[in-house]
Structures are given as C-alpha cells and as structure tokens.
Image 1 (cartoon, rainbow, N blue to C red):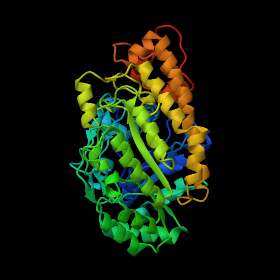
Image 2 (cartoon, rainbow, N blue to C red):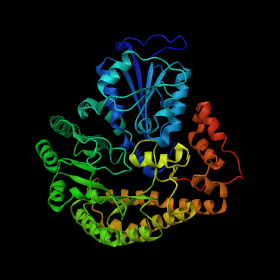
Image 3 (cartoon, rainbow, N blue to C red):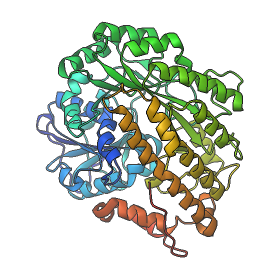
Length: 527
C-alpha cells in the first residue's frame, strides 16, 4: 500500500480517531413515516465496527443519518479515518462525504450493500472498499491504512465472521439511535448469516447459511430485558429461525413470556400453525414474508407446482392463518420479473388482497444491483441493465432492468393501478379493522400512516406512465437504449443532495451533467 501526498503514518491505535457514519437515509425528509421509522433501520455492521475499534483502543464517533438531522453539522470532525455504510440509493451522498473528507486528509472506507454490489465504481471514490468484514480485517486496516489517490483498495475476509459483538457490546451505539424515535424503538440484532434459499435476485443467495453462537443470542436477550421494559427486537436475519426449535428454545430460556416483542423476516415454508403458536407465545408482533411472484419462487412459499390462482388461494389461506396469531403481516412482491406478462400478475394480486385483507403488501420494482446476485450478473451479461442513477435504485422509484414483457409506460400504468388498489380507503379500512395492536401500542395507526405514505406512489407511477408515453428519450432510456440519463433525473439528484451536490467527485458530477440533453421534462412528484 503506497502512501500519497506525503501522508503521515496512522497514529497509534490508542490515539486513533475513528468516525463511523451509517447512511440510513439518502436525503432530508420531514415525513411522519420517516420520523417514526427511519431510526429503526440502523445497520448492525457500523455498530460492530465501532465496537471492534474501541476494543483496539481507538476513539470512536458514531453517527446515524435518518434524514432529520443537519448532516453537515452531524458529521464527525477531527478524525483520522472515516467509515461510511450505505445502501445503493445513498451512494452519491456517500461519495460526496468521502470527497469532502479526503480533501481534509482523512482516509475513507466504504462498507455495506453498495460496497459489495458496486465495488469497482466505489473504489474510484474511497481509499478502501470492504466486502466481508471481520475483526482481523478491521484491526489490520486500522494498524496500517494510507491515502490512495485514484483507485482505492478492495479488502474482504474469506467469509462472513463466525461471531459478532452482541447487544451488550453495541449498546452505546444502539442507545444513541433509539433516542431518535419516540414510538417504536426496535433494537437491531441478528442470529444468523446467509440464507438456505437460492432466490436469484437476492444478495444473500450466494452466502452459506450459518447461525451465530447460541450463547451470544441468549445473553443478548437477557441483557436487553434488563435495559428496557418490554423491548422490541428487529431481527436482521435474512430468513429468521430456519433452525426453529433452537431459536425458540433460546428465547424461552432467556426471556419470560410477554416480556419481549419482535419483528422478523421469514419464509412461508416455516410458518405452519404449530410454529405460529410458538412464535406468538414468544412475542412475535410482526412477520415479513416474501411471495415475490405468482409464477415462481415456490420453494420459499412451500407451494410445490402451484402457480397463478391456485397459488393465490393457497397463500391467502396461509397468510390468514398467520394473521390469526401475528398482529402484523407484510407480504413482499417483486414486479417486472421475466415470469410476469400482461395484466394477470396484477389482477391475481388484487384477488389475493381481497382474500387476505389483513395483510400489508409491499411492492418492489425489479432491480439489478451490480454483481450482487446471480440475476444481476446474468442481466448485465445480457445487456439488460439500464444506466439508472444510483439515487433512484431504492426498489420503488425506478426499475433499471430492461423489461421482457412490458413497455415502461405500460409497466408504470399497471404499477399505479396495483398501488392504488393496495392502499385505497377501502383496503386501508379493512386492514385497520383486522389489525391487532401487538408490535407497539398504536400499531393500527402506524399501519395507516404507512399506507398513506405508500399510497403516494400511485400518483408518482401514473406520472411516470405519462412521462414515458410523452417523452421518447425518457422511455428509451428505461428500455436500455444507449442514451444519457434524462436531465430531470439529474435535477432531482441535485435537489436531494442539496449542499452535498457540490462535493460530488468530478467524474460523477460530469456523468450526471452529460444527461442534460433533450427537451426539458419534469420528473413526477418523487416518492
């Protein structure tokens, strides 16, 4: 590792000043939903890196950005090295922060999903980009980092760590984030890494499933019970309780019934009635489960060869069973997959919502994130990934996959229709009537707030439909034609980043500015 600009060697670990920034949001926000929920989306690994750095004797400043803070004021100053964690929609904000700090002589490190999905791009703007991260990697980095002009350095452990600091060790950082919300206050924890399923669109599909030490999980829950009255745990496992009896046994040993509530993501294949009864006894307040498509991904849903309406009926019956035991049930759908064509997938989803009125549907646009998943890699090789700016790759703003069976205008028209149906006053009222407070007091009202927030996307997608049908450049861009990004996208990025747009690295800014061609069009009101 060569040094540049006469960079001094890093200080001894005992005097090393480490900054950590977890970019939960990509832009400022004043929405009620964001105010209530964003603090609950804090990532675990930035807290873990903070613990490891402190164990090495470093001085750590930890910052979470939820969209409500003045980020310019919150960013740590007088530091030697800065770690930034970001999902892809916050990539430009992360690049701006890195550029700002590198000009001050601070070494910067990027981790998180964007680092894994777009490492080659990120290496242009950070001194280091990290993939799998364990304590040895962090220790070696802190002992011998240096500035790297131009291309940064990629670092990755051979595999995921075998253990992570638990809630007790991370409590200082957890507490700082909990203090930012006044309603939910979920504590992030994790009991396993990787996933036993191999869904082609998922970043975890290529990571072997492993549990973290059971003693650590048990200690985490006991410690948390001593800190908070009836705490809420947000399990970050890609698929919670694959080893169901083990997990439930740990919870039953650690926490008296009724003393803990939790929300987790799990597959339908694990949610039979006997499991549901035990989940309910142990405080399950919310379950998130993936349906994805009515024509594929049946392994997770345990649907065998069922497709179409047969699958709709079977899944609705099971989801209604789940809702008898778990107060909040969210089902995830992915739109724009190659298996889907015409109106049928959308009409089947409407039928499902009629049959399972208590469920909260979450609609995601198909996206290919760099080389993060087998599907993304295949689509890249096939030339089916449009150059949609990172800011819009949040699964709800724009798709970046050249659709096989829909034009962009038709696709967004159908998205507007299904979103309008999902969060109509009738659907919201039926959901409100059937929702039982269990995750938090006032959970029924929180569901209404989320429904109101999600319903805005119907108007947004209708606006995209109109834009695609009226503007050849915009539609062609989303269809994968070799066109620069439309100017309206660059204008929105500039508005989102505010003062940080001026700190974008020149290469990124120039790429966005090159999109300023064609007639002046407006992006619909952005979600």
